[in-house]
Image 1 (cartoon, rainbow, N blue to C red):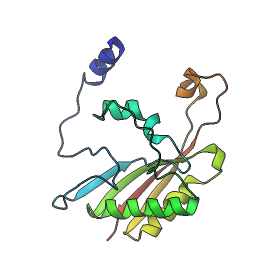
Image 2: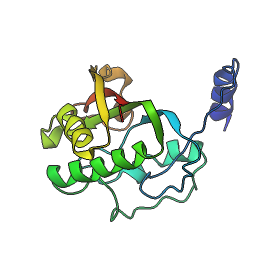
Image 3: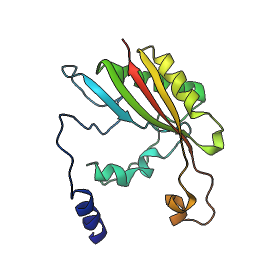
Length: 177
């Protein structure tokens, strides 16, 4: 608790100016939203193709954002399971649903990656799913994310034989329709 307390004091020493916004933590396929308010900016990082333990691996981050401290290990509804094609279709549905709550011209930033074992290109997965969504998302910028230095990877804190870092991309899109 001392470490968490010290870190919180450091982070909140200079709090940015307040803005009108909303953080929504959850699966967009299930989150209840009203269409009265249209979002102008979306930042997201969906589970990666083949990822089987997204929720349980992210429990601490979710807990800091207000999630229940009871970890669920049920993988039955995780979007990352299945083939590349089924994943692209499911992700396309996510982008279409997000677009339904956004104003025309909304901007979306997506951090997305690929598990090294699947040898898939994360950029093509995101681009294909945005296109298949037929929601009007237009990719504006796509950047590869440099892998963290080995000394900064969390995995090195827990194991000596660590596999390669995930290949990740940042995709910036704009809602044109």
